[in-house]
Image (cartoon, rainbow, N blue to C red; front, side, top):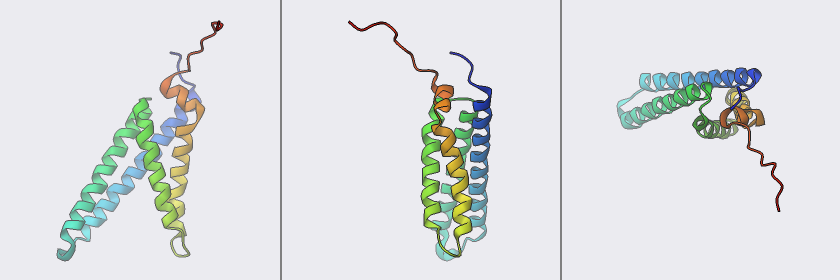
Length: 135
């Protein structure tokens, strides 16, 4: 297998960095959730905090794998970006458009980087061509 294009490697590393920033935002949301725990919603607060932390850990592991050109990272990261785009869509509204943009821009960037043909080659290798004539 030939070495991937350095420009593609840089783009994938930037995409991995963006995913790490998304994970940091999830950790921040977990901290805010813990800080706002109340006795009347203790169970939902704890489970939400755990969900945010597990989701952030998954993003960190997948971002690390993407930076190391591990092909398995592509599907979970693409799914995470699609979920984030759905969340952005839900935030469209006069007072929350800024949240929608904050969610959509990085998700669109990472998703675009993950579906580039050059990314496919970098993660899975160039497709094999069978030049033998067919009878």
